[in-house]
Amino acid sequence: GRRMGEFALAGLRRLQAKYPVIGDVRGIGLMLGVELLRPGAWERMTQAAEQVLYAALRRGLSFKLTMGNILTLTPALTITEDEMNEALRILDACFAELGN
Image (tube, rainbow, N blue to C red; front, side, top):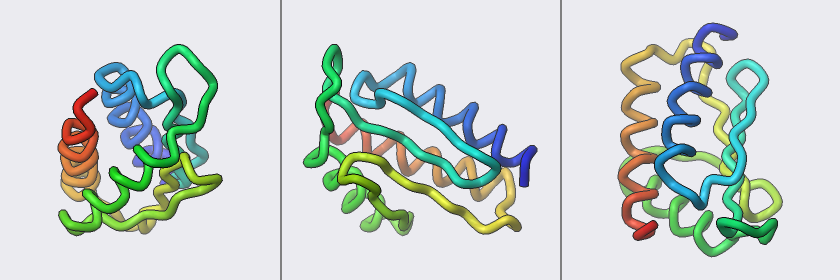
């Protein structure tokens, strides 16, 4: 789980570099959090988080929101690199839809 967690974090950090709305990315093993904040402020972006959640659900990726603005991803310990890459691709498409 740890190696895949590091792989996932690296992918999420690439998304963070691409989308200013991603204020923080953190994880312990495969418990991953992506916090959405207004760029340049510490304001929670709850509406954007919901938009990403529903856009991901439409594409077959399911996760929970914590505190309204943190995408909380807890994939199965058996997840493969291909599956993780697909999840990252879906998240990328969802963030692109926000128009950041």
